[in-house]
Length: 304
Image (cartoon, rainbow, N blue to C red; front, side, top):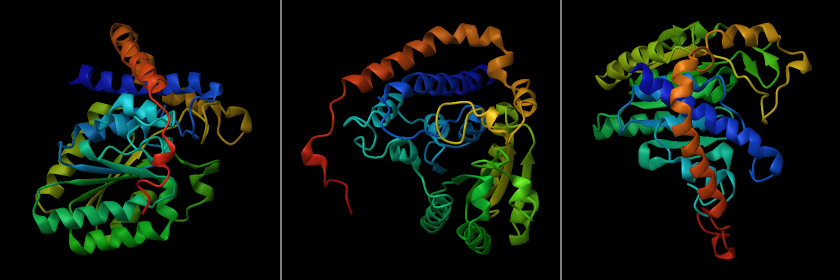
């Protein structure tokens, strides 16, 4: 299990690092919100789900897209704005989707996918599909009214949904303590939703075990669960760069998380897996670069 999940985490890391290298060339046709540092959250969570379970995510969703089984070739083609992208090049980085594997899409609007997850959970419950639905969002999304409305609705109707809050402590450049008078680990409890806190967002094994139990519970009708996972983004809010010189977060915090990072610490497994994963990433980039641009006939397709 360790090697399998490590490989999934490393695969995401190498994809992100390739995007960083490509970005200055302007081949990537959209802003990017990097998942580096938060990969283990996505891998641990998605490893706890079944093939028919659904995930609704945020604009920082490269990791969840790949962890849920999204096609890497289509992802790079989408970032390039090409026709062979998962959304024909129209969505870009912030609106990735792969419904064929249960990744129901990301949104650039903060908290907007949370009620979509509740709607899918309501449908799953009424249709008796046995699906568990996962809603993934950042700590900043909990400040939006729709988050509170959805927590209340999900609790009231005992929906089969697991709310996963990726708590990296930041909303763009604003620290959590300057934004929230409430305690994140107490928020969902006010709506009668069981809350579980995971302190180490680098521990993909621990995350998988905890989330698997929560998924099993909601599938059996326990009602929603709220899982708060402490994590850390390595890169700037949007873009491929480092921003420690901006002064809003200390480098010591980054070093602390790096000391927990399996990709950094387990050099042996990293070196063993790197050739295979490098080849896969290179193949995906080649696929994107060979993909045609959308034609004029695509201009008004998929518009509702």
